[in-house]
Image 1 (cartoon, helix red, strand yellow):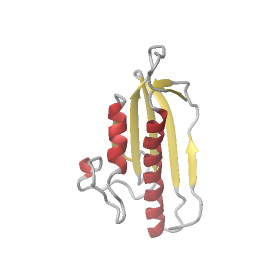
Image 2 (cartoon, helix red, strand yellow):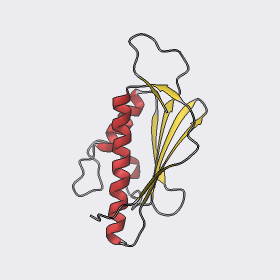
Image 3 (spheres, one colour):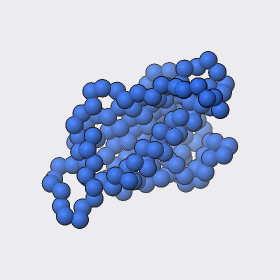
Image 4 (cartoon, one colour):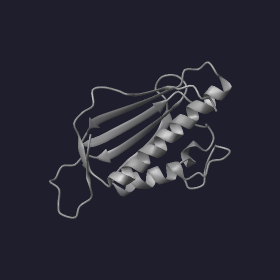
Amino acid sequence: MSTDPFDVELEDPIPQVALFADSRMIGQALTNVLKNAAEAVEARRARTPKLKGKITARLVAEDGRVVIEVEDNGIGLPAKDRDRLTEPYVTTREKGTGLGLAIVKRILEDHGGELELTDARSGQGALAILRLPMASAPRVEGAADAVSA
C-alpha cells in the first residue's frame, strides 16, 4: 500500500440541510463508504504508482432529500455481480468481509433512505450515492438525533 497522500475534497457550496437520524449510524455508513473509496484508490495506485488518487464528497439537497455522494478514481466497481455488492459476505477484496456496503445499505434503509453504487462520472472509479429524507418536522421528545450539515 502506498504511503503517499491523495486528495480528499468536499465540494462547495455545502447546503444547509437537516435530517432526523441516528448520528452514530450515519457516521458509520459514511466511514464505510469513505474507507471503501480509499481502499479502491490504493488498489489502483498499486497498479499505477504515479496516479494521483482522489476522493470527492458532495452534499446536495434534492427533491426533499439529503444526498451525499462519494466519488473516487480507484479501481471502480466490478462488472460481474455488481448488483450483489450490498449483500452480506459478498466482496471483491482478498481480505474483505463483505459487510461494509451491506451495513451501509441497511443503515440507509432503516432511515428511509437508499444506497446507489455506480461508475464515477469522470474517468475510472466509483460513485456511491447515499439518499436520506430531509427533516421536515420539528424534533419530538425521544426522537432520533437531528443531524445538520
